[in-house]
Amino acid sequence: MAAQFDVASPVQFIAKRLINDHHPHLQKQRIEYLYLIDKPKKQSKKNPKKREPVGEVKVITGLNAYLAGTTDDPFGEPFFVLLLNKRVWDKFDDERRREALVDFFLCRMILDEKTGAPKKREFDVQAYSANVARYGPWYEDLEELLDAGEQYKLPLIAGPSSTKKAVKGGARIRKPGAPHSPR
Image (cartoon, rainbow, N blue to C red; front, side, top):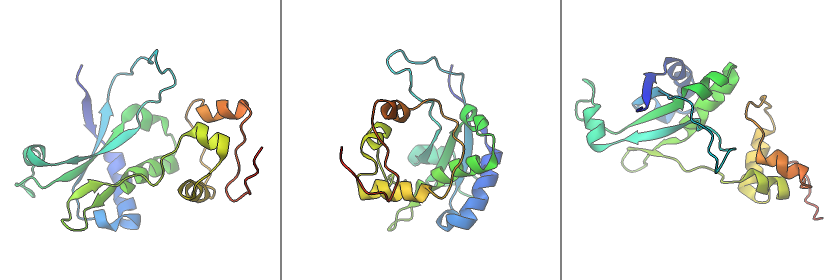
């Protein structure tokens, strides 16, 4: 069965406010908001803890942009699509968590400084939870990310993570700003 999509009006409502407050560079940029409606996938035997994808940002260009052109944009200028997994969105039962999710993807949307064309921003930090569980925030970018998150505490909805398992295995997590003490 091919993937099915639906217009994500609640996502667009949240995004409009966030764009005005935090992402003004996107105010005049075309962004389509869609839910991916897909039947649940069976857990992989190879990777049973693999998480269901939350969503993604796509940049639509070329022929696809032309075919998706509108009366306002008959020539098919490149644009963004924010695609969210509907099942995951429905699990996020509070507005603050949904807002954080939408903002996460809006942070990924930038415009090329020279051409103004939409493109995806690289992530600030690449990390593995097991590595952080063993060594704490061992490099500056990771420490900045953890420090930034200290001010907010949202209840988690994800299942058991490798971090919890790594901590049970004897690793320690150092709080951001605490001195590192080798074993």
